[in-house]
Image 1: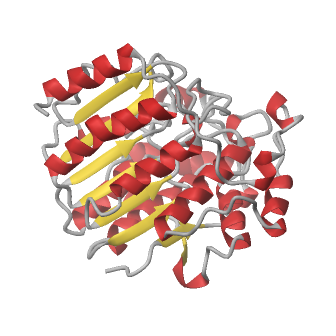
Image 2: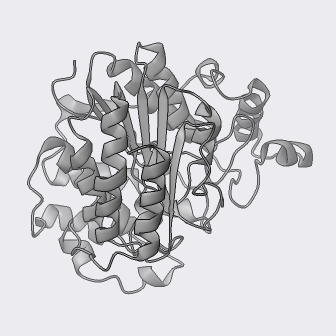
Length: 372
């Protein structure tokens, strides 16, 4: 059993970009690594350099022709119209770029390795993971591969039976539902913005009985997340008695994200994580969405802090501030005049607010359907 939480990362994310106009042009995982080290939180003894998943490992879930097409697209840096139509490679969302196989294969390698390392228990953080839209035979929503599915299959291969997958990204995890639809030993729970791409995950959608979906309206706040956590998520998990929990904590659910419309602070994500710790002998925490470099770096670094029980500083030391001041968000208004607290703190001010009737009604409906 792992005695301390371990962090799986890689410098490929420092050197790789989807392109100058793509939402994933911003640094994310490298900033979390740098900020954690600046805080003295990332001891070499707990850092693992992510392996790159081999094609054979990816074919455990992904279609062999798709894996071959992804490899060939990286090698040639072009895709034919036929490959684009069939596998959605070379689109605006899923562009051709230099590391278009190596980068997602490294994220997948981290989640697969996590499944192996957690065989006897422990906690692992792989912030490059969480690519929950990837489909067996195509790229989807910036996700070329589906590392949560591959990580959960790895857990299964290493003796883990009952798995809870909790997703608090602003977007619904459509690819994960495809992967485990109808599986009685998987419970998928998603809290996501309603009517946001991919426009799946309706209140009545159960993925063959394996999923609980809570679509929430714009402006979803910390108080509403706390209610969902206490009244729905934790009772579901406690009754399911999982052998492992996988948490996807996409940072696009916070208020500053440019692609979503929720109003959470990073406290909401940290509180969800705290509530999960100790609920299963194995915990795998993944990143996911998030397109504001400062909110991603601050939230995901705080996730690592919470996992380790570190004190979140009220004022960051100069070395950590330097990491945040070095970030750029070119081409977006948020990058032109970022507020000072994005440089000097990790923790947001709480974003509490009224709990709207539609939230309480949806939670009550799901509790009734699930017999809670």
